[in-house]
Image 1 (cartoon, one colour):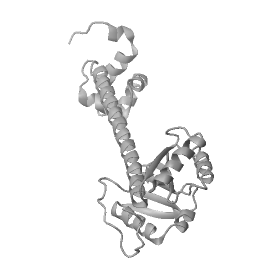
Image 2 (spheres, rainbow, N blue to C red; image 1 turned 135 degrees about the vertical axis):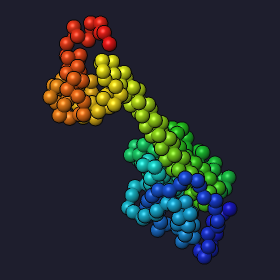
Image 3 (cartoon, rainbow, N blue to C red; image 1 turned 30 degrees about the vertical axis):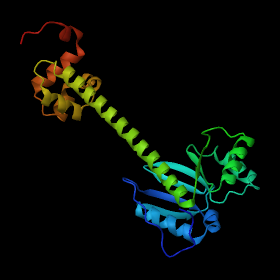
Image 4 (cartoon, rainbow, N blue to C red; image 1 turned 180 degrees about the vertical axis):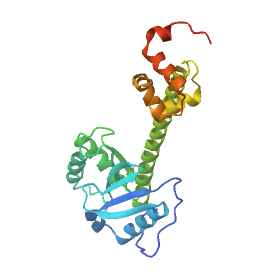
Length: 243
């Protein structure tokens, strides 16, 4: 599909699952485009729950999906006779953004050949940044949204995995805590949980006085005395107990 002159309607596109976020469009880039392009982009973003803002930014677009920012240069008119400005701009921007892509519309074979030759002439490094050649503007923008979306989803998955791992460590830590505290004669899980909430770690419990334990928990004086003696007196907790 190639750019149409119609400004009355935009082609319909399937929405991406789980999308949403913010899209920042460079004011200068907007002014260089046909009104149809802006209409298409606005419609496509709205269908995928993105909020569009026009701002004075260095790249042409910045997407924020799932708390992750991705920057893009979107070249919609490849001029074979004037490519130096494009590559000098790309080389400058790639040092400013950790996640940076260049989308280029190359509908003709001559333009593709020009791009390939220029890529090596300007000594670009593969993947730094990633160039994405496309047939038309619509395809290019959809690629852009998919890249931003997949980056956001990946980050959310990594965050989810990190939270899951932290939760697992927390559970393991609590299980160890319960094992240590309930090893004190007469102390059960309820007592251990009460101590955890009111006093804190095993080290904090060991430093707490009998009076502090009584003031902050519902433990009996006998249990508070047992805890204080057990954790403070090595001879007490290392000697055999008759229960």
